[in-house]
Structure formats: structure tokens, C-alpha cells
Length: 189
Image (cartoon, rainbow, N blue to C red):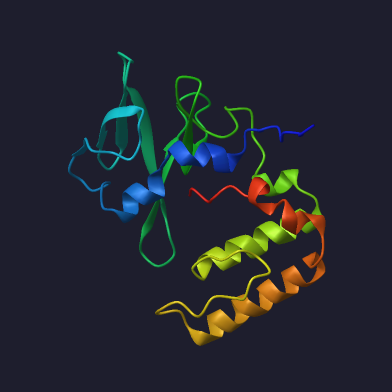
């Protein structure tokens, strides 16, 4: 009889469909002018309008739009960091996730755990090694480490390789490595 793993809601699962105000700022959508985005990577959003202080989201199959007020925090070297207010609890957050018929902050969605919080020590080490290998171009843990990616510093590559070897040494010969493809979900954020 085959035992199935129960799927539990995690932040990584919610991050597949989230609005990150830092991403909007990096792409230049939070300038003084209003930007309308129609071809989006979010499947539930019909249209999104953003300017410096408000983000307006029109969801598919919903009549009323959802508004997110944007506030800015001054940084030490002359730039500013954007934040959005959750429309439900008015908490200042960087990301809002899809749930409950709209986009809300993590605490309004029941404060789901991070994937690493649901794992034991060896599984967390495996997950960390997997994500470090993903930074190098991806390979299965305990396989040979991939070559250094283009434009990565040699010092950074050496540090990542040493960390991967340190994390994978206690994992050799464990059952965790055999069941690994079922345990790891690709990163989405």
C-alpha cells in the first residue's frame, strides 16, 4: 500500500501567485506616472494599474477592484523602499498572496509556515543543499557539483561548493536521498 504525502499550504506554495511591491519598484512601475499592465504573469488578474502611491488590481470574475496603498521608507543611501498595506488588517508588508477571494498578507491567510519549518534537521539540510545547487545551475544532491556559472566570482563559487559539501556529508546513504524528488518543490519566488 502506497502512502501519499499530505499537501500542506506553505509560503512557497502561495508565492506562486503573489504581488511583490519590490518587484514593481525594480521594474520601474512605481514612478510618478500611472502604468497599466494587461499581459501579466498572474492568471487571476485581468488588469493592474500602478503608480507611486496606489496599486489597483482588477481580478477576473469580480466586479469591485482591490486597492493597495503604497508607502515609502527612506533608506540610508538616498533611495526609498516601497511597502503596501494589506487591505484587510492594514499591516505594512512587501508581498500579498492570493487567497480568500483577493490578495492579502501572510498573517491574514492563517500564517502558513515556510516549507523548511515542516522538515526535520536532515531534510532541512537537504533542502538547503538543493537550493544552493540551484544557484549553480541545478543538479541532484550528491551528484558532482556543477561547474562555475558565467559571471560568478570564484570566491563565491568556492564558498557555495564548501557549504554544499558540508551539508551533504551527513546525508550520504540515508533514505532521505531516495525519496527526495517527492519532497522538494521548485522555488517560485
